[in-house]
Length: 365
Image 1 (cartoon, helix red, strand yellow):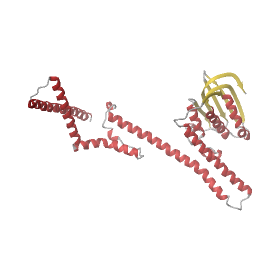
Image 2 (cartoon, one colour):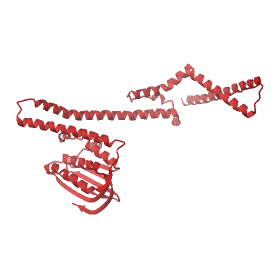
Image 3 (cartoon, rainbow, N blue to C red):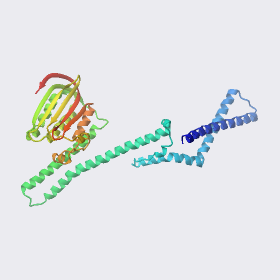
Image 4 (spheres, rainbow, N blue to C red):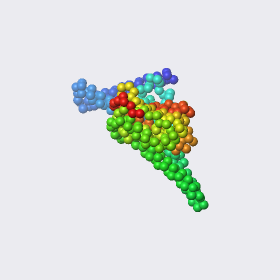
């Protein structure tokens, strides 16, 4: 096969050289006849220019005639057909393209050949578009599921309320369920809009310098009704820390992480919040709980949209699996880092690392 390809290449080169020689020979013969007929003898330089121009013209005409040849055209179509077919399939939304026809057409050293580059880029484009399409379909499926569940409850209990024989207590219970499901829908819509906004290319962060320890304490106090209701012990240790960031977006980070810990910490559990300096200019915030924890397999997907480590448990808690995705996106926009450690049945710890402005050794306890 290699020898045959080598012979084909040599044959192609000889064919081009032969065509050029033929074109230049014909040009020389024509110009000579012409000069004799008009009885004009140009100088050597002008004669070379005229012969070159006529030779190139004849060579171009010869190549044009060859491309019009049915056999040559059929060979071209045969070679280009897989690429054209692949492009057509991609335009129709089918990304399972087959370009194996070209596997035996190129050798290892042909990787810089234009056709090889075209084929490889089409394969890469099809793969990437296929992944995007798969993510899009999964996203739509998840959104549809998250919307359908509360809607089903709302419709069912609204229908039940038509029964005039319901006791007042039962009627109140059904209305509370409808209200809860409506709040869930509202939160889902809000989080989807927030994710869309965070992923916008035109999003600009409103960075300013502020006290991080004040922000954390404010959000902890704002969540007091939730953790006092479950009799959760709050262990807080906040250094005097200054950070430059988008304060409103960072509020979302701490609110989501705190609510996540409160949600999965049992009655009488403990949540610790520690903020301190790390190194020269880094700030670390750790939020640890004694909640239900997660399996190791769940940790790999914890920041994915709509991912829920325990579907039934999250359903009871009312989450939609978008909170940690929003947290991760905001931290990434601030060029920070977030990591999670968890042990099933023991608890979970989120560690956020950010760039700080200054640090004072006095602590707020």
